[in-house]
Length: 323
Length: 209
Image (cartoon, rainbow over all chains, first blue to last red; front, side, top):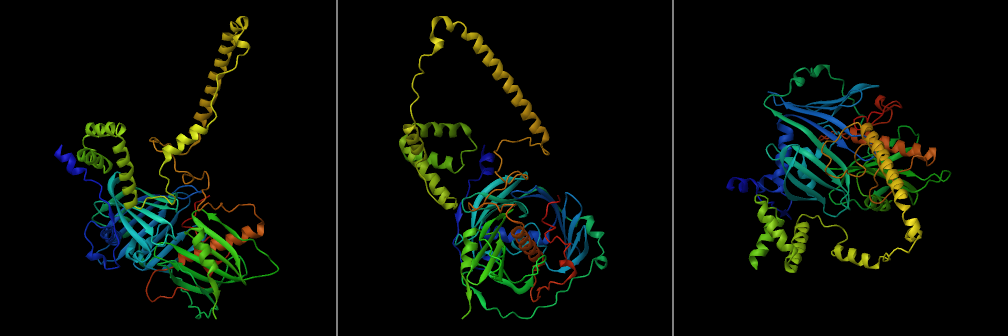
């Protein structure tokens, strides 16, 4: 009986209001320490994970995700969509290569695969401390393993929340739910198999780094002198990219701004209003992304991303001409 | 007095898991004790508050609202006398009833067959279907609306659809080309070979059709 009682440690509830700090100084059972453990595990362990991504309105998507670190300390990562024709992403160090049907393979220079899960969050969770609050919930059992649940909610309630379950033993991600303001489930990642090994998976030994496709070089765009500014940027978000671009299928030139908080990326498109083509204001969801298009002053503004429509609207309405 | 609160608190915290007999004991006590019921409510409220699980609109007295709704429900009165109550016809009724039962049995069988067929059509069998299905997110069944906003309709004008697709495609492409690295400018021009018309930019996230 005593044994049983020691196993069922009571749920501990921590509500944390801590200043932004280095993660090392947190007590070992705090949410920050757990997330630090997660990011460390994601970067340093040799693991093979299979997971399923669930989104509203589309079929479930099973993935295989492998990661290894070789003797030289080089990180290797592979992400493979298991249904349908082979779609595969391989990362060797800072080179991410995409192998997909109908497209010649190509590589990008990046240290993360911006894949179906928020990789940036997995590697740098401390980036979220600005805009989000981390709350320790307790333990449960996920994918057959003992898991620690952490809730991540937006401080100013301007973005969706996240529930993550981390493996008690290794700290790796076991499950992730993105939920809306009413607590409804928006997107889910469920790990179905987790293997941590001493050596990297044999798959990585077969890759010859020389044979990987060339890195696509981007010609740096000229600095943009925009006459527009965004008045309201949700707490913790920053502008990570800004340029003029042409939409792939349309001939229209738009000004593009990407906002990011380390968890979600939001695209903002500004387009001069064309009086010949009146357009409807539109708000809705495409899978788990919110899409908002409104006319605002002289502009047509379109915002896409995983954020509540009210926040998207607030951002759009705050855009104004620089005086 | 404090002991019974203590027991309740332990139960709410999940500390009673080890000994189920004592937890049922506490539950019985709660059923019969208004004091404990009040505590029950506040303990759960406190817990939800600490976990930040409180809903946007707090609605404390659900049971009371249900009771009120029941009160305002129109009462069902005793059935009127019908032809069945006539002495002669009354004896015929059993046959009619039997027929009705047969019909019901037949319809149940049909329903079962339909049900079985539907189960068989499913790709994946769910052996442990104890929990209710997550609305909207399982499979490609029904799009769920976030934020009470509707899913973008498919047939809302070709032009608009085309524009939305262009934006969505571009958004996915931007996400992919968002490379995380210090001192690297990842801006992109539109005339690259990988942004040509054939390319589906959200391939990694796309479900194969």
